[in-house]
Length: 430
Image 1 (tube, rainbow, N blue to C red):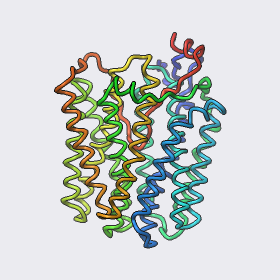
Image 2 (image 1 turned 120 degrees about the vertical axis):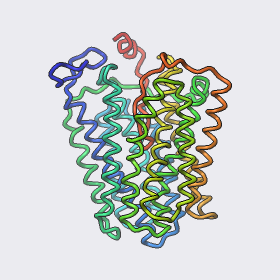
Image 3 (image 1 turned 90 degrees about the vertical axis):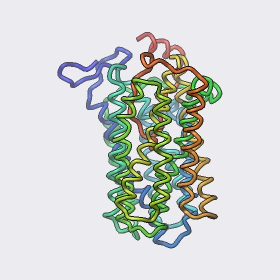
C-alpha cells in the first residue's frame, strides 16, 4: 500500500513500512551496473575488430558469457542462502569488477572468454538477488509498477553505457576502467541500504517438464527469446564492426536499440491484457522475423535505415520475453510459481548458451551475418508453434489473465526463490 505522503511502502508480510529510498537503493545500484555493462558489451567486439582478431573470437566470448549465466541460475540460490541478499549482491558486484579488470589487462581472447564467463555468472546472480529482494519488500498492489521501473532503469543504463563507447579511446583500457568505476559505485547504495533482507531461501527449483505442462508456449517463448536476445544484442556489434561501421556508428546502433523495448512493449502488453496473449506473441514473433529479413536486405547499407530496422527488431524480440512470462503466469497456480519462474529462467539461459555457440560456428563458415539467419529461423519457428497451439488448445479468458509488466531479455526474469517451509507458511498467510 502506498501511503498518502508517498514516502513508504508497506511490505507484503506486514512488517514495518519499507522506505521508498530503501527500495530505490537496489534499483539505482542495478542502473549503475547497467552503464558499465552496456559499455563493455559494445567495447569488446569493437576492440577485437580494431586489433585484427577474427570475429569468431567475439562469438566465443558471448558463448562464454552465456555459459556463466547458466551457472549463475543454478548457484545463486545456495549463495544467497549462505550469506544473505546484501552480501551476495556485493560479492557478485566484486566479481563483475574483477571480470572488467581482466578485460582491461589487454586484448587476450582466451582471458576475455574466462572474464566474460565470470561476468555472466555474476550478472545473472545479481538479477536473481535484486529481484527476489524487491519482490519480498513491496506489496502486491504496486509490485508490477516497481518491477517495471526496475527494468526501465536498467534498460536506460544500458543505453547510456552503449553511447559512452563513442567517447572512449578504443585502444586503451579506458572502457574497462569506467566499467569498474560504475560497478564500485553500485555497491554503495546497497551497502548503505536499510532495506530489510528476506529470510534465507532454499535453492530455487528447476522443473522444465512441469513448466512445459503448465505453459508450452511460455517455455517455448523463453527458449526462443534466449536465442534471439543473445543473437541480436550480442552479435549486432560484432557484425557492424566487421562490416566497417565506425566506433561511433556501433555505439549509436546499440544505444538506440533499447528504444524498441520501451516503444513496443507497452502497446503489446495493453493488447495482451485484453485478449489471448498468444495472438500478441504471434504478432511479435512475426514482426521479429520480418525485421530480420529487412536487416538482411539493408545489411551494410545506410545507417539511418539500419537504426530503424534494429529498433523494431530488438523491440519485437524483447517483447516475446515479457509476453511469454505473463502468459505462463496466467496458467499457473500459486503453488507452481516458484518452479515455474525458475524453470523459465533456466530455459532462457539454456537457449542463451546454446544459440550463440551455433551462431559462432556458422559465422566461421558463412560470415558474421549468420546471426541474422539464425534469428529469423528462431522467430519463424516460435511463430508457427504459437499458431499451432492457438488452433489446438483453449485460450485463457481475458478476464482471467494477470497484469502485463514490461521486461527486458537483457535482464533475467524475477525468480521466486523457495523459502523454508515454516517461513513460507508465514509469508503465504499475509
